[in-house]
Image (tube, rainbow, N blue to C red):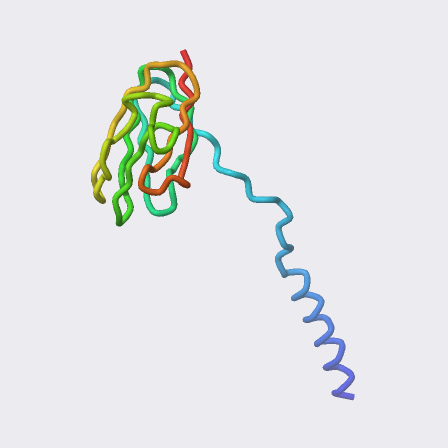
Length: 131
């Protein structure tokens, strides 16, 4: 008789435990949203061995954008197109920033400006400048 009482209790615990299991999430991960400052107060982009963060931003004309090297090796933010950097002349750190160093550029010309890490050209981003 004891054996029969154990089976219903075990079955009840099994069903209770199944109801507590978390259902897998079916929501896909979304890409990070582009950053848009509320004014031309300035914005900081981090660069490291994984690339730029955020990589895509929208700013009003006159915004200063600062690139901070938070990585462990040199990085050189520069305007496209590699290696001449002539899409937006002047937007080029001109040398690799050592870890902890930064470079700032004030975007005054309206348009979408692509950029890259000159020392690692596959790492890219874009800055859209609005009026």
